[in-house]
Image 1 (cartoon, helix red, strand yellow):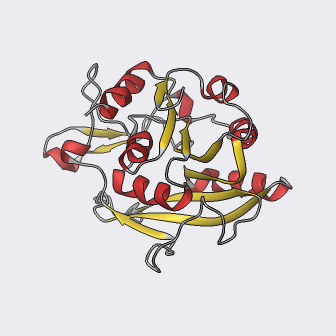
Image 2 (spheres, rainbow, N blue to C red):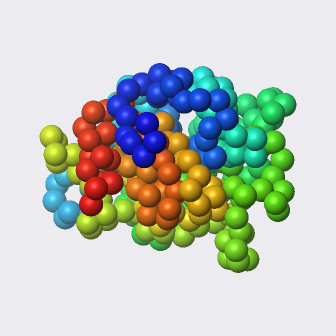
Length: 242
């Protein structure tokens, strides 16, 4: 399975991985943020198109606990989770880590979007950030080969990058629609470079269009990706060949 993209349920995928074989589980699971019938004007194309915040049933009822319990088994001692998540689910991840004697809830990492969507309705703040939670399997020390800081700039828990656009923004060949939450390669590469040794294995059970596997490939790490959507899985495979 090494350096491949699989297509199956995330739990079935994780069950195939050996115990203590993964340096970093870096992934972007569902956020539980969908809202039925909540549609806003899409300012980006200047037309009467809309942004639909109903991403599908999978984004309403996602329970991260089974994923965490199974993925924990695959992590090496000293390995880490880095998980993109929403404000709604951050506390669930944190509480799991606090209650598990083998895990340490380390820190919040924040992606600041340098080009956030405008808020024309002006009834709330613009959503200019996304959260990640860092959970380690055991303590992290300076001698840990899967925790690599090289500069003081690296040590900041705030990462700046624009939302994916232009050639980086990928569209499904069957619908022509973009992935609703594609992550920029620059963010993914920086996280992997810090939390996984060169040649180490990065696992992404919810890889979407393959940003995390591609970032791992770009900087000399091995990867195993998976997505239950066959179109996204094939898009990821194609992306890794370009």
